Length: 135
Image (tube, rainbow, N blue to C red; front, side, top):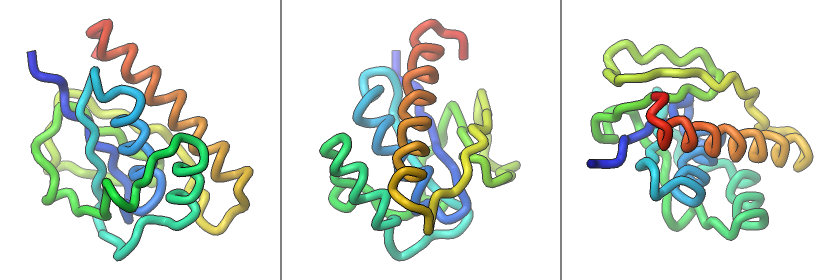
């Protein structure tokens, strides 16, 4: 059976959704395929997110990821919005949920790390639900 495809969606695809894609690949790559995209693209991923993901997990998002629009990712099974009230009515999926995460851009490392840890926990929970076929 093919692994389900999960899209992490945010407005700019530069911070929270990128962190979720990186952690999804790192922590749950055996359970689902991770993608991220936005309704707008930014030229660069948030530098604080890049620095802290490298420090905490050894993940170099600059080498493996870039800001993408919704039209640039394949069809997915699960859509997870990050909490920016992104409505993607044309983005078909079998399951959709919103994680309600505040954007840490411009905040200190403690706030960023808190957001990254929250995404880590949510990735693990999502992975468990997919394994148990709850979604």
